[in-house]
Image 1 (cartoon, rainbow, N blue to C red):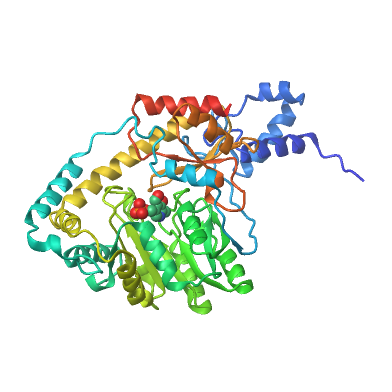
Image 2 (image 1 turned 30 degrees about the vertical axis):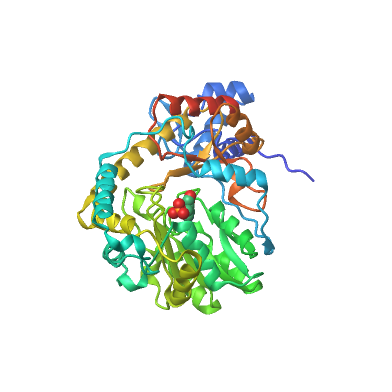
Amino acid sequence: MTVDLPRYQILEGTLRQQIESGRWRRGERLPSIRALCHHYGFSKITVQHALQKLEAQGFVEARERSGFFVSGDPGEFESPRHASIMEAPKPVSVSEVFQDIMTRSAAFDLLPGLHRDEPPPGIIQLNRSIGRALRRQRGSFQYYDEPAGDRELRHQLALRFAKRGWTAEADQFCVTSGCQQSLFLALMAVCQRGDVVAVEAPGFYGVLQLLEQLQLKVVEIPASPQNGMDISALEEAVQVWDVKACVVSPSFATPTGAVMPSGARRCLLELADRYELAVIEDDIYAESGWRGVPDTLKAMDGSDRVIHCSSFSKVLSRDLRLGWVSGGRWHSKILQLKLTSQLASSRFLQQGVAEFIAEGGYTAFLRRFRQSLQLQRDQLLGLIGAWPVPLRATTPQGGLTLWAELPDDVDTLGLYSRALEEGIVITPGSLFSVSGSFSNCLRISFAHRWNEARVGAVKRLSELVT
Ligand SMILES: Cc1ncc(COP(=O)(O)O)c(C=O)c1O
């Protein structure tokens, strides 16, 4: 038996569904009552009744003499939808096409190579510090540095983390050649071939590559675009499967820019204690936060289960190839693995960076860098706000990228190939999971200045999408 709904309820449901699907964005004006009457063939009373119902539910707000608007701040998008499917652990196999995209996307630039930005003053100062350190080297070119890395650099790292809630000692750090190597050493230290590792979905594709390389199985835990990994889903996973480690980015995760709230962080660590998990924290974007830098997860780690991994790549220079890992209870194993795989790191680079930090150059650089990032993010939101397709997008407060969800029928892998023909590099959503999800999503970077060419590239993308 079908029940005939009153006409106002039919219209109310239609409009609500359109708002939820992003047909109209926050702050946007709905069509006038007259236009709605005309479009749907309903009376004025019916349309008013439907709008009043939506207003009472907080979906729209009436503005005097202006009409009805979708509730929320203008300029902000509806959030992308939260993935909810969790599949059984499986081996990872990253296809060659994806490897190729990953290599290109690592530049975070829509137009890589063509439009290199001038180095900011901070980088020039850094180069001088490195140059001085190089000139100070005398006989040391015949010796390796100690495997853990330059003590002064590790001391400077410890001082910086004291400001992020973690009282660390220089001995707790091991210098690496980037966060990717830190993650690699961390996974090698805690896992054996065939073990199951929990990761965020969507999450960093570099971790998927590592899992494939190490022949580990992945279980993808849904992550919300605002709050990151869903800890209740992780709990379900660890109850059912023998999960060894969990890789998580609590502060400005890529691709969404999500920040895990402190309550969820606590639950994660409790879970790790209960199920004996190693928690591998990828903290690489934390210092980019312009509304504040979140504490590291390591600051809450009462049982030394967190392996903290990071680098200077995302905030200072990708080309330094300088990162670090603090391995908690697995630290001596990690030091041994570093020794076996790399022997040592370049001494003059470490000393130059240590001097740059100690002299305050890094702090000053970060201040300006965060301001530029915020501006570049706002400009990007403005640019994609003009796209003629319904769009959901995150509004991150840090990190280098936002996550956009396009209509279901858009295939961003196809878009990638078409854009590449014109020299534009985008990062399709399907890269951020092994499940085949997120095929209508896109990671868009605001790491670079919006010069005319890059603005043109964003506009061209919108044409390709439509
Ligand atoms: C989340 C995340 N972790 C780690 C890395 C690798 O960083 P690095 O260049 O320091 O090896 C990246 C680079 O894109 C990243 O986005």
